[in-house]
Image (cartoon, rainbow, N blue to C red; front, side, top):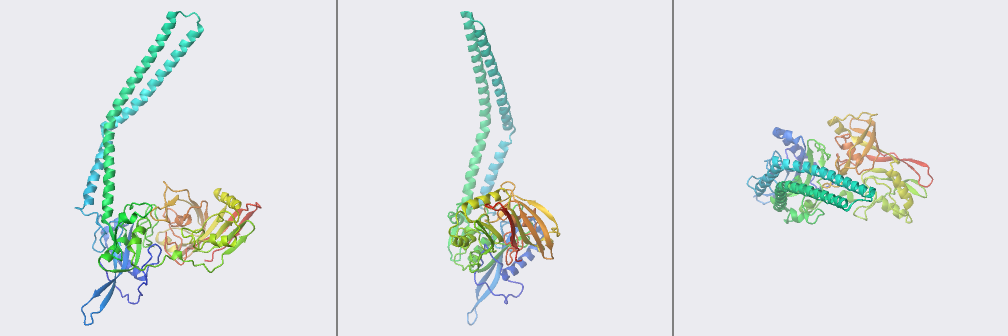
Amino acid sequence: MIHFFKQPISHLALPDKFTYPFHYTPHPLCVLAAEEVKEYIASREEWQEELAFGKMFGVLIVQKENKQETAKKEAVNEIGYLAAFSGNLAGKNLHPYFVPPVYDLLQPEGFFKIEEEQISSINIRIRELENNRSYLDLKEKWKTETEQAKAILNQAKAELKAAKEAREIRRQSSSTLSEEEQASLIRESQYQKAEYKRLEKKWKKRLEELETETRHFETEIEQLKTERKERSAALQRKLFEQFRMLNARGEVKDLYTIFEQTVQKVPPAGAGECALPKLLQYAYLHQLKPLAMAEFWWGDSPKNEIRHHGYYYPSCKGKCEPILQHMLQGLEVDENPLLNSIHEDEELEIVYEDEWLVVVNKPAGMLSVPGKEEDRDSVYHRLKKKYPDATGPMIVHRLDMATSGLLLVAKTKEVHQHLQAQFASRSIKKRYVAVLDGATATVEKTALPPGRTGRIELPLCLNPLDRPRQIVSREHGKEAITEYRIISESEKHIRIAFYPLTGRTHQLRVHAAHPEGLSCPILGDELYGKKADRLYLHAEYIEFRHPISGKILRIQKEADF
């Protein structure tokens, strides 16, 4: 499965360390390999309809030590690449150009296909029972007669009550009722109550008979559903036990063992079937040394996630991170560049300050608040050190680490609460400036002429399998609204002003990149677009009411791009 480059590569230096797969710039060898894979994909006409819906592909640069029998018995190092796709392609896991899966669950005689057929037959039986005419008629009859019984019994109760009231009137209106008349009233009451009891018993028996007949079907359906659930769970466990993942040290762990250490405990569907785990597994099995990796998207963007044709993307977190933490052991891997404190020796610029609050110009690449690594450089750490007597959380709102611009900070708990209330009521006005990837707009025929204004409403929520990436979800997402104005346009770039009316995570980035938004990612957005020297997004203006003086403050700091 190893492919050797069609063009000379001797002028390209080999990478010193293996790619950190969750944040990277593709090595030139990976770019060359990806271009060759794209060429091959484009040549397969029979795949194009399926691939138009989108699929992730990956390349792995490998080094092969081929010991040739020469006089000096020297080792000749050969550089090539492997290719893979995520999931399956054209209904198969095996295609000659690509590495095989870690485990082929589509093999016809394999346990997965056999058990899957059994589960499918259970599904068919459940559907047959749920749509059985007799069952549906019984359910409808039970529902109709339950309503009928309720109406009849309510009417009978009303008549009982009316008769009782009539008797009371007779008793109160005549003080000379004979004993015989008194006894007659009592017998009438007893008879009517007995009649109601007989009527109630009759309907109860009728409904119980219908319920018993209906329950025969429902019991069988529930038993089948229980069997299906148990079979599915057993199948999933057996399947994931077949995914025996290697690492560079030759150690083996199955997916269940790997995911036992995670929050979810159980591997998610599709775990082990992404491109990079397939590539590494094949390399280890065939004594090939992994040097660098890259994964790219082919086709249209999915409905909820954001993917652009031909763009490179980091490996997913939910499915792949636990697997790759194991598989990369034994390799020397690049450090996560996000952990580097690139502004450590720079002073934090203060744009406005008074006794109560501060507005700083956060540089791109600095955290607003510390994350899991409490000792990482952040605006909060800097200002806590500068203002040791400050109370409360201080940071009123946040900017993404990659975003630069104005950040509002309170020196007291009370001021913090006041400013947060202004954010909650949406009375604070903000303006961001960004540069969009004009090349993408051209490719995807997005019309964004200067002066155009608009409004984007796409609800957002976290993608739990690929943190911190956000997805558009009308079912689970929270309201997210952005207004915008196109400032200028050049051949490659579009300058735009954003006016967010809500403050969701990655709101502007997703609204810019999503096909139902501007379909034009912000330049340098490696999560939703293409990596550059920085994310070209800057919070340049903020307007709010001062919590103490009540005056409106308007603060602006223009972007340096």
